[in-house]
Image (cartoon, rainbow over all chains, first blue to last red; front, side):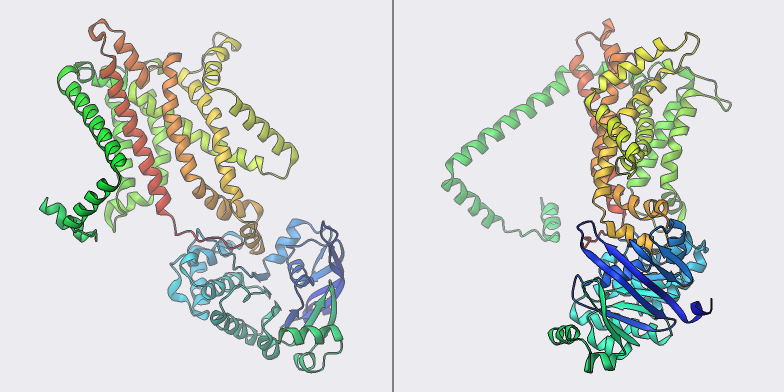
Length: 250
Length: 357
């Protein structure tokens, strides 16, 4: 398994069709290397969110298969295999999805204690470390409803990091935030990238893609249109479809 | 009056009596019909209050209440053992007070408030053990149980059985397995279509007919089971309402963290759903307490049963009003206590955010 050392996620012709016959993913194949930051861009409905959600089994596949950290995921994947993957792949959602009935600290320690069987003091210590990294250690005893959107999203990142994942998935992490709160979340993601975390990020933040991404991938209608390093992507995109999209959002 | 004024101004109530007076005067002149109706209502209320008060102070003979207090509390429980149900009711009252008190900063009270849920659960085996005997206490047959202590025992044990059963039914009703979903639905629909008195009759009169003579199931137990089976159907629908109000993204976030479906249910979905269901569940609990009085018709001498048997006593003939007013006050007191406890539970949790969808 020489490949799995340098590759975090490989997709082999994965296809996903929704019940309304909408083909969200059309034979998508790609490779995410260890330690790289891959940014997924595309118009809404292009399948980028569906793609990222297949990586931890939140969306099932119709055909094709995935290799996530050396674990195989296909149409018949059993729940235990999916759970094994989820313990090693963290995910951050657009709407944060914090647990409103638990304090910030409890939000972060829930999975380490219940999934990994860590003791409460160990989990709490690690959670406080993560909150410090995210710059919100003083919020530990509060509840999600008492925090701003940017703070909630940083808690969500800390919660995903608490399982010490090898890959982090970000599904439009700044789309639900006030403009002035976007930066604090992007900064947290940037420092995570600097630490060498493998990251797949669905986002429309051009500056983040330009400065942090190793590769930018453009999707439309369930297919990958093109993929290149950020400089090439933003200055000399090959496909007309990509150029049109970039003109529209710039 | 002075003290009241000071307090009111502290609370920030604008206090400008002459202005209020002027406003009132202007209002009466502009709306003469309003004023006339208000006056009539005030006179009616005063008349009713005066009549009730004179009846309560002068005409009523409260000896039917005052000379029978132990009966109302314990029914025909053996006199030397009455401390047992009384100890239990005292413990219930103390626990209610501790629950309603403001959270303490330290000391014994703080420790007690931390393990409140466990204390409440422990109340039920404690009640059964104290009333029934065992563990060195002489055994008292269930037909000697009665009065308020029986009412409280019926209410608490049936509620404690109905809640987990109702949660299971609600989960079954929302399950993706067709057979489980169908059977839960059938059960809920059936129980809601049958009047409670029929279920109670079935438990008290028909079940013994089906069983051999030598097997005699405790009558109180049969009543508790009937109440619990009936209430569970209603509890299930309340809990289902709570479950449906939790967005699917909560479950998604939990499973993305590697939590199993069961763990996600236990730590993420159910705690939120139950909290949302608290007001509806309080309704069920209050209804359950009042419904236990139906057992008076089926031979259990709970609170209402004691009242009825006292009225049958020639010494207290014609004292219906006194007995029923007294029982009304007791039921009101306990239902209010339950409502206060529920409000405490509702407020004790964290501030709920509006879920963004």
